[in-house]
Image (cartoon, rainbow, N blue to C red; front, side):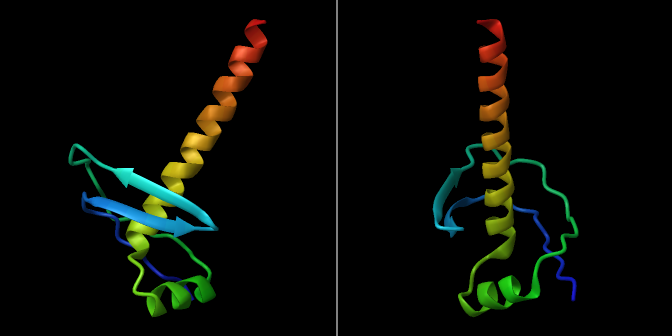
Length: 82
């Protein structure tokens, strides 16, 4: 089963994902667009039972993944300089 998440708003939020506390505060209204994501059904059921805003949670998780990759890439670039 495929669940569609619509990410299309700006707000402040805090969410716990995979045991990590993720906090994002948007100071500017970012452009948003609807997207389709395929998410495991058990995760969607658990999120729904907890009244979790899945769009916000997905956005926070994607943002966190980007930051981690950028940190690793930045570290690798710095390492090459020495």
